[in-house]
Amino acid sequence: MTQRYIIFIRAVVIALVLATAPLFAANMILNQYAESQAEAEMNAMAERYIQRAENAISETVTALQRLDRDDIQTCNTEDRGLFQTVISQVGYIDAIGLVDRDGKRMCIVPDMSLSGEAILPILRPDGPLVGIGMLDKSFMGARVGVVSWDLRNGYRLFAEVTPAAIASDPGPEYLRAYRRAELRLGDDILWFATGGYNSESSDPNNAIVVKVRSGRYPLEATIVSPVSAAIQVVHDLKVIAATACAAFALLFVAIGVWFSWRPESEAHDDFIAAIRNGEFIPYYQPVMDIETGKLRGCEVLMRWRRPNGMIVSPGQFMEYAERNGHIFDMTRHLMQQTCEEVGQMHLDNPDLKLSVNLFAGHFRNREVVGDIKSIYEKSDISFQQIVVEVTERYPLEDLDLARKIIAELQALGVRVALDDVGTGHGGMAYLQKLGIDIIKIDKMFIDAIGDDDSSTTIVDSMVELADNLGMGIIAEGVEQEEQIDRLRELGVTAAQGYYFAAPMPAKQYIEFADKLAEEEREAERIAAEEAASAAAEAAAAEAAA
Ligand code: C2E
Ligand code: CA
Ligand code: CA
Image (cartoon, rainbow, N blue to C red):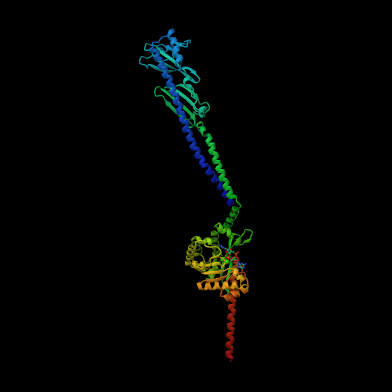
């Protein structure tokens, strides 16, 4: 799986988390709000039921008391006519009549045939004056209440209270189809019940239950509603919240997709994969001593070796690697490889130098000192054999910090070369301020040697400057013998360029060095032989003389 798929999936996951977290929170808050809202509404409903029941009972009691006070206490025609008047005045009352000691009806207005069964309990002398009970008759889910008043002569006036008086409180619309309302007398006599047909409101875990008791009569109202019905009230808000969150999720995903599918990042992924696969390797270009013809060391130059074997030059990737900060890892890895590839060679030849290129970014941070220390400390290449090159082509941002980093490197024994001297804008200021050990004269000036006098003058003054400041000097990009002759005349002692060798892999570089050493030994041997034979000749001549 490539990097961009990982980025893409990460973007989707982050988007989902970012979008669903507020969705969950909004959901919870809205549910809580809906439940407390519903509870308040149900409480108000229950209170209204109690209120109406209380009113119905108390108005009925008052009406019966008034009949008693006005001596309207018999079943005669006149009294019954007055009962009728009360019925038409008090809306709650459906019927009025008298019962005997046994609780059996003696008469009732409006007239109906009397069954002879008891509708009230048998009168007790110590019983309450007001009695409240229920008839078996019912009306729209409500039973008919019966309120009685003890006339203290063995008879009781009674009135039937219409259930319609209390039965019609639909409550808020969103609960209407689901809620169940009950009004009870005492603990178990159900006066009135309505609703609850469309719900599982009997399940106490998913229901909101509200109970209100009357302070005056043994009445209790219970309203039960399923939580799901209450939550409906915030349904619209939830849709809005969900839509908003979904929109955010989409936005985040879109941003994620945008970032992960940019062609730039495709290249980026390949590049990171190449770093991981170790495709960036060192090439080594010899640096020669042009006075003695001996090898002085090498410059390490990075190459990208593609899996198909193609070798890519730094010009194609270095700027990108520097811009994206990959160069830090790449440089570390490059240095590690030098330890493995040419460590033994440097251990065997303590005079050889190894020059590593750094870029301006390495001088923004002390980390490079730690890197060089930790990589070469335990290697076969000593700090004294290492040179780091910093180019003059691009300016260093913080000269003071760069100076400190250079000083720390020098304290280890590492030397610092200024690369591409003459091409940048640093000039003298750089050389002095940074405490440079070596300057590398750019190919541009070497190329011009011979056909351009002013170039010779520039190189001349660079050499003079280097001498004055006690710095070493290396000529870059030497391709012709005449250039070497001219450089010698000017006092330059070190050079690198295709004239000697192009950058090459470690194996070839080691062979190159071995061959040079072999030639040198051969030359020494011949010289020694010649000296010996000359000495022998001289001795023979002397003997002959
Ligand atoms: P540079 O440090 O100035 O390296 C010298 C460049 O000149 C190398 O190019 C080398 O191959 C080339 N060269 C050497 N002798 C001759 C010659 O006689 N004729 C010609 N025409 N060219 C010659 P290369 O290897 O392509 O590197 C280019 C630049 O990339 C380097 O310039 C350096 O600035 C940068 N570079 C290379 N490796 C690294 C690295 O590991 N880190 C950093 N930061 N930059 C690197
Ligand atoms: Ca260089
Ligand atoms: Ca250079």
